[in-house]
Length: 104
Image 1 (cartoon, rainbow, N blue to C red):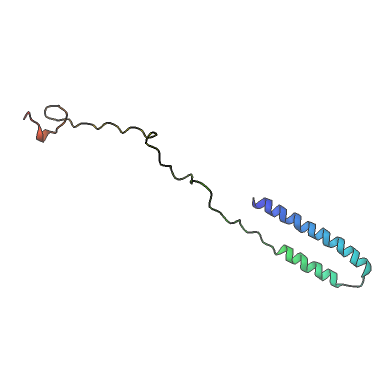
Image 2 (image 1 turned 90 degrees about the horizontal axis):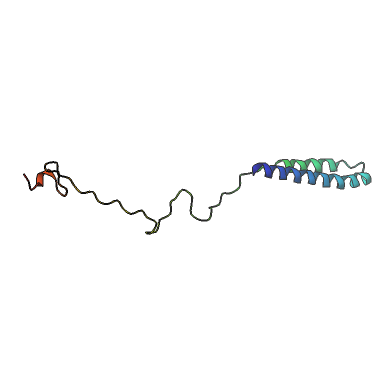
């Protein structure tokens, strides 16, 4: 993008120089002894050269940023895994632990 802007700027500068040289040719034919046109051209060239390019202003993009995940609907959510029951280490039955085992 920056390269395109620089190319466009150089084209505009060249067009301005060509236009100013066309105008100066007509003036130089009528005013051969006037040296002020050369200094005016130098000033215009200096002004054109002094133009500096800056980075374009960043704007906030429309829509949801790609870095954020959207909130899914309930139909899209995966079913929660079934709750695992506790297994007793003493008797091997499910639903209780060793300290509360009924078969002590």
